[in-house]
Image 1 (cartoon, helix red, strand yellow):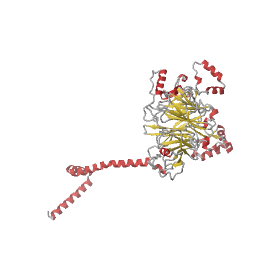
Image 2 (cartoon, helix red, strand yellow):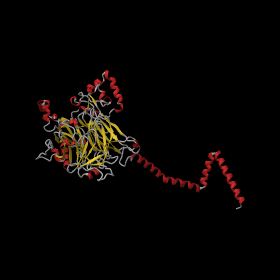
Image 3 (tube, rainbow, N blue to C red):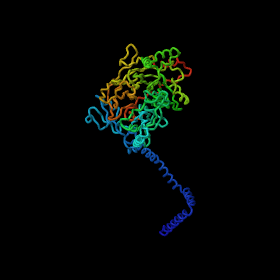
Image 4 (cartoon, rainbow, N blue to C red):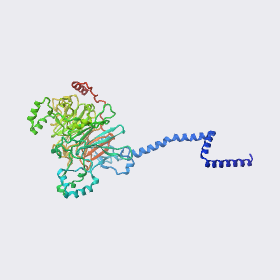
Length: 626
């Protein structure tokens, strides 16, 4: 081809390109049609575009994966692999206050301690002290929730605060402390609840101060910690029908208000320090919580119904998840041995009671109303274990097959505050209550052993604390106070009773201990827990947790929080943390071993409506033998 021919073809191509450009500017619709026609007439160009799209689709998953992985790292792994505060974004916020950074080791139990807590990796035997191990970073005992203390003002000082000559000083004091208004009154216990819909769990906190509140504390999966939220208001006292003014600093028939604005500081109640009259708040709230077992559930913490020990109403109720009604489970209980006579003599009513017993066909007055129900614990069969401290006598009861108590309606729930029985039937005729244990001290905790056949009971006396070990077997159905531990000796000639598992005097706490003197109000909270391997965790001294071996009850280590207030409860969460409460604080420490899980496949099935009382008793005995 000649050079002239080449030039002519180039010129023709340039003219065609210029014409196409002018045509596209003048009419976009024409260009679109022309482009479509080009794709149809040029399959090679169309195939190239389709190939590019397929290549992009093949790598699209990688972009999605990279975004998801980045979100997970930012929101879940800030501060360490096992850190669940809220991720890297929350690392810019103020860190939690460290309450304890080391754990003491007793004897040659270092291996056991390392299997429980996360110990700093750079700490070796040659560099550490002879009696302690440093906890790893982000796995120390930390304060995750804190509130200013609730200083309860008595009625007399409140009236002074409301006088005209002191009004300005009160307003000034409250204004200066408006950022420090407390929201926690007196934390007593915790329990873990798993929500299947959310796919995660949360911790419920029982506040026993004033009329009680139940708080919810949780860490979500997003970049910000969810923190606390109010789960239930007035969780322990609503009607005021059972409030005794002599014992609770309140007027008879009155529940204290959960209002903290007037209790910011003791100086807001009177003019001078000498006139200040503040004290700890009355304990009429919720003392203990438990999740009702659901048969064949994936885990024991899954359940819609929450069981609450109400100190203001002096009963144990089940809050129905569907209706919100409060079904009374325990109102009256069999009186402890040798206690009924003492109570009647103190009231000077022995003759009147005997006369009333003769006049009535059923001796309902033999049963007494619970005073301080606490330490709610479910067995794998669905029985409910609980304690009651009254007049320096501690008793452990068992309500058989509590999971099958029929719920009441919301309308009945309002009237049930005045009920003197748990159901409309005569409770004294029922054989569903057992007295498992009795002692002349204050019961501070209950915990099932890892094999579910042993019950550990923590008892405080004026001289020290003792952990008893009580076998749970079929013979318990015939028990009538044979588990009496008032003499710290097993009864001979009868069934195997409670034995001493561990004991310590208060002198071991040096000056850091409480003088109980038989006063149950000074010993509140659930201070005993067991992990999945059977190790016991108990609050011995006010701010010390002591770990006991499963086999012989030997001390393997201690965890002490310096400068903190007395611990009131200890318990495991399913998030890998061991939680501790004081009256106005919540602490946690990461552990390698979780709490003991109660199986749900052993829960006794719901009895048929046609079953008789005798048939129920035979079924219970057969269950216990198995």
